[in-house]
Length: 417
Image 1 (cartoon, rainbow, N blue to C red):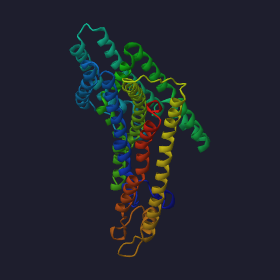
Image 2 (cartoon, helix red, strand yellow):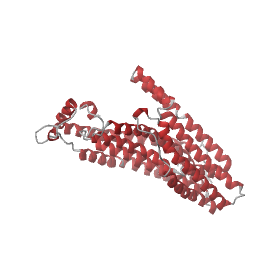
Image 3 (cartoon, rainbow, N blue to C red):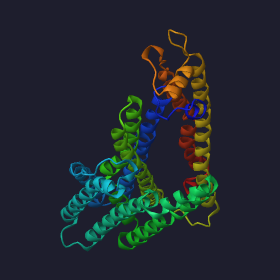
Image 4 (cartoon, rainbow, N blue to C red):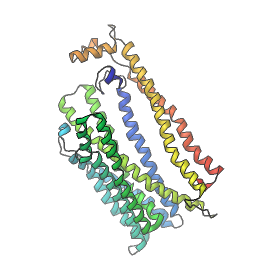
């Protein structure tokens, strides 16, 4: 923002001291962050299903066998990702580009279902009605995940009406864009909610709480290839940034712009997929917790129980508390980064005594600058600020996340959890 607003340079201009930190942050957030979130749900779904089925060896083994089959299917699906689309910037057909990524997902999902059918036959026999009901739960979870992804694509891709309606509001100013955007965002929650409700009710009818846990495993079975589509977003964004920093031609930028536009959609799809899988995983973990907590002593888990309701309120508050801590931490780190960028604009000079800001002004006025007149920013300093702040500021949220359930559980009891 400092470079754009105060110096009038592009986001990925190499004279911007924070441009490398920005590119690193894209990878940290959308690759490492989303990867940690989704793999946590992945492992949680396996643990939840295994805990619920722990009394029977075949029920204990099934989620682990499904996870192994999904991993192999993801490896195979990876080789089918390809496209013949040309990079025409914003004129590119995003739906065709999206299908290039989805081909790998669809093939991986079909192979995964074949593996799941084989696993059911091996564990329960070809004539087991209960085994095939469990297989249907896996199919329901997988289809629900794909449907949530397509629904997210519909609401975030500029090939479809919702995003186009936001664009059309720009004719009347930024206020109407914000209003339309918030409205579309709120409406977009309806579809995944209905899909999840249908999946939960259907799987509960088929195989009870264990069926819901298997649906979570099925939804995340091909996570390796699904998460790749989310990681695609920051990779494409960084490709555009590198092309800008290297001064490459407009033909290259047209291709990277096409990929970057698609990357915004795939990133949104990954987040929608993460929310949907988290719901099923949380439900299976709750069922597994209740299953273990009531083995030796009967406990009431009725919603009207004051202790349970108090725990629900406490748990509902925690995400807002964590989000507030994170946002304030980001604000502090951003303020420090802004001060550093401003300092470099003023103080960093070349051998001729030309400051970084003066070099930027020359480039802006003339379109280019002689190499001996150019000034190189200290990008390492900005990366150091963001890295140090991210590690330091996450200590408090991590402590609260770990100790809150421990304190509630030991001081009040398992019903509060």
